[in-house]
Length: 267
Image (cartoon, rainbow, N blue to C red; front, side, top):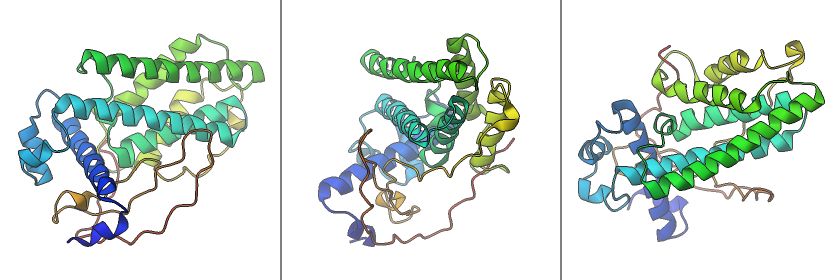
């Protein structure tokens, strides 16, 4: 039995982490090759598992796409919660929210390349995603309006501002590479300087960023897929929004058979 099972409590937990690992890695494969150009056969081959094994976790590409949208939306909500709890002026909370979102979504989550377009989703899945995106849009619009009231943001059409910001962030997927020369943290900082300095009434007074929290989703060990893939330590799933998170449980360190690649960008 592989050593990584020592870090899990139940067979159900092992299965859930395996599924999350499949979805996360499949998202990275599909985002590189394109949704319509990638078959499940190709995904299974890169993952080093059989197509039959892949079907134990997902039934088709649409399910992978839907799960990636849900992960992205979850990350947006966690980022909004963290920024709200950090406090400060609206412009600083906006920048912190967006920085967390970029780093999480394009970093460990790796789902940024699949969440730009909702048209490939099934109709029922698309309705769920659009409703949650509308709620996130309302959060950002409300933050922009608060910024005008507290004097930290210039007045303007808040919806147009949100669309412009999110289009730029989603566009990162068209040129970003984890193996490139610039880290996702540096990309986030440069993007936010470009996107928010023109919105700030006093850009020279912007607050420094606090440390970005650890990736808040389940970080399934990739070694769950096969003995030949990379294994990484899992991260505890956070408490629901509005609840205080419990201290993380101690887990056994997971072995790694090869060094993790440095993150960065081609640009």
